[in-house]
Length: 269
Length: 271
Image (cartoon, rainbow over all chains, first blue to last red; front, side, top):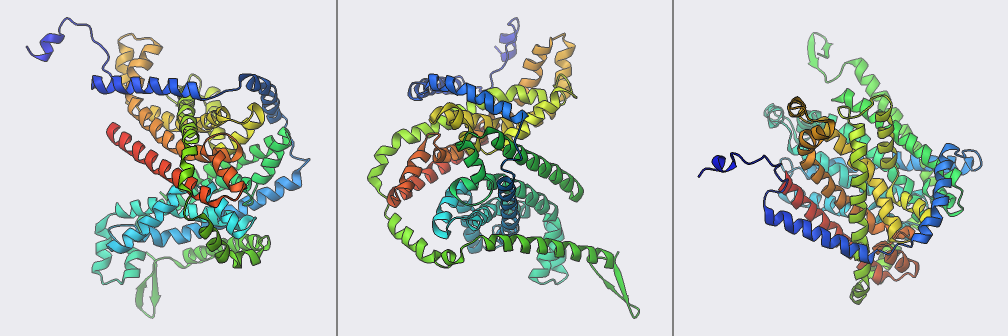
């Protein structure tokens, strides 16, 4: 009998997302077992949570009445430091990641260079910002220099990887045409490769600027400069209105950056 | 085409004179801003410490190697906590993100001018605040522990998941939805048979992708007291037990690499 004749007369049933039944049931059972195990081991102090709801309500209400004035000089200094760290680290990070991206593109770089650049990218991506920041604060001392170095380092992994992928998927024909005209290597990169990846590079740079700003807000927690230290103090002292003000400023700046990056990316592409 | 006429000989240039001047001015402004920023950073830096840095780095390296391997027996529970924070946080965030995504997608939102902006605001505000800041806040509210970490990860992930999910909803094939509607299906039936099957692969991909990111983020949540392996890291750092620090860093690195590998495999299987 064919499959169709078996199905005739049977009501239609929705096909499952995972087609193999044994895989579906193992996944489901494993998931349920995990949930039970997790539920047994995660201790939640419900009375403490219940007490906290009052403070949670106070914090949510603080958003309707943020206090920008009492600590305005601290907030201002922290914000300026965050922005400065963001800009400086983005510039340096992008400047370093362009040569690394060229080296990490297989269609441009020879194999040894490719492997070295790819391993630099892998290291930079595997280490979280905050851990790098802890180590750099231990080495270079407190202050925005540690934050600046951390963000530059993190930018390299992100930007080089994505830019290298874009270079690898570029149109070979244009690059070959430039090479055929007798261009030197630098001219080849400048006229054959660069115009093709420029829109992507600008878009990624602005996206990274946005990420760096967000990250700079937490580096202060470990002493690497920026608004994070002020925010941490505000939480420690239960000054929710000041904390709400800082969070609102962060949200507004991130929204502005996102809008700006949308406009710029629409223009260059 | 920008061509310069030089005594009857035409020379091709990349930009016209006006373009090159505006480019030059933009570079000037950019360099000036960077110089200003660098000066501000340099003012607040104690350069003595920086010149001393190679010696300090070398010192820390000799203290941190070899890692204290026996300490790994005490890391089992913190790793399990970290895994729980990431996984439970992802599950909670997906539960919260699905309705937000449906409210934010322009083809499923009930009200384009009232509800959609609110949903978009939720997405932007949860996305723009780092999970460590959410953890700080939640610790002040509900006390330190794994639960604060779970909630912090859950809130932080709403924006990311909802954003990717609503983009997937907006890109669905409208003809399938119309076909279901034409059979006389109710609004919920259209949702279940017309929209959900189309976004299910994207949903699974997003879930695994975010889980991978959450493993990364939950390893450091303990630094502010929200449970997981970060707690061990911060206590080891506080007592300057560098051999333990290096072991914990190795464990975190391994966790990150494994979770990335798992997520890449699963996403490869879905797509």
